[in-house]
Length: 120
Image (tube, rainbow, N blue to C red; front, side, top):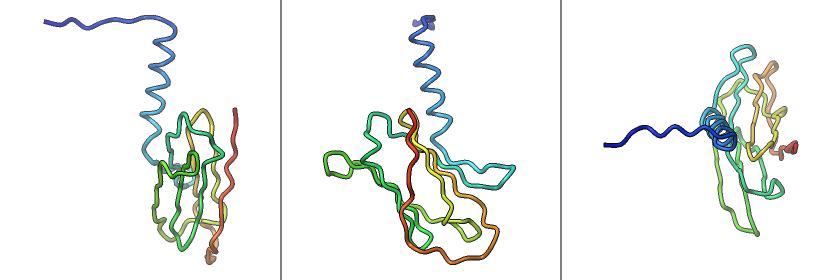
């Protein structure tokens, strides 16, 4: 029989909090106030210089490279009604957050790259 181990140390509690944060943010959500799409990607341990985000024909590609080799690539299609010209991306503590705002005017989106705001 095993008993539940109770660990109470500041380091363990910090790691548990970080783990719970990552679990909570690995699934995409919709901001209920603005109807924006908010997607989260865990790239902890990777240099943000290897990160690239491109948009083409309503498809967003998120690629993480290390030493010139692609280590992760996510492609997803965004439904009509979202403003692909005003996507925001922020990379903080290994977590990439991509926000795709609800479109206000009907405009055709041109292929382009998305810049990532890296904060330490």
